[in-house]
Image (cartoon, rainbow, N blue to C red; front, side):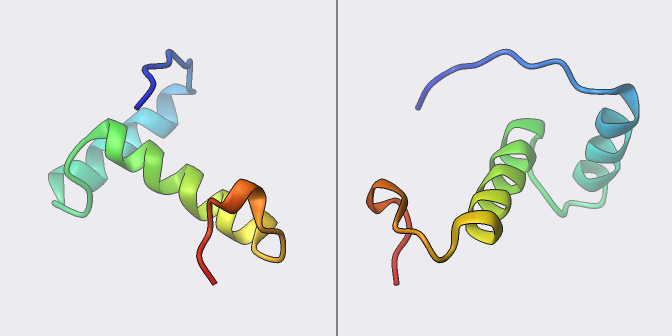
Length: 55
C-alpha cells in the first residue's frame, strides 16, 4: 500500500469521524479507501481498469 497525504474539507472529516463513532468504518484511512473503491467501481465498472475489478 502507498502512503499519500490529502487535504479534505473540515466537513468531510467531521462526517468521517461520525462514521467512526458509529462503528460504520474502523478508521479515517479505511473510510477514504472505501470511498475511492466505490467511486472507481461506479465510474469505471464497465472497464477492466488494469485488471483491478473482478467480473
